[in-house]
Image 1 (cartoon, rainbow, N blue to C red):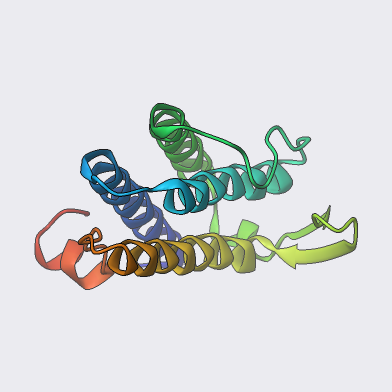
Image 2 (spheres, rainbow, N blue to C red):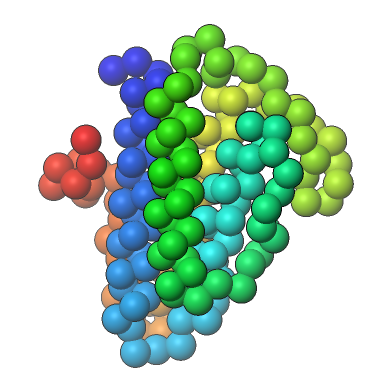
Length: 156
């Protein structure tokens, strides 16, 4: 598996994991306000990073106020956009330097490869926070371990 295929698999996992979290949030009986805020942040940040790579203006706030249906729509849209981007990505593109301003207005430069890794890890970090929130409320969180998805052939 080359590096591009690795990232395609990581983003397929990311979409699956976001959908798993959404599915559990739809069925929980406890207050999911904070978990929903975190999921909305995940999909918004995923869109923001792709917009940065593509040199497009930021289209959503970093912490949007989405309901479950909006999160569901964003998960689909963002995953499709990443899939489209990754389908055209070449190994040489991974080293491309992307200049952007962060949410504090600071100017930074990162490679595409670093950004791709960050997107997947950032999302996993916040899904872990969602799991902690849900456990604290007495709910069972989504089981989103990467190895689980691979063992069950839930991602290619």
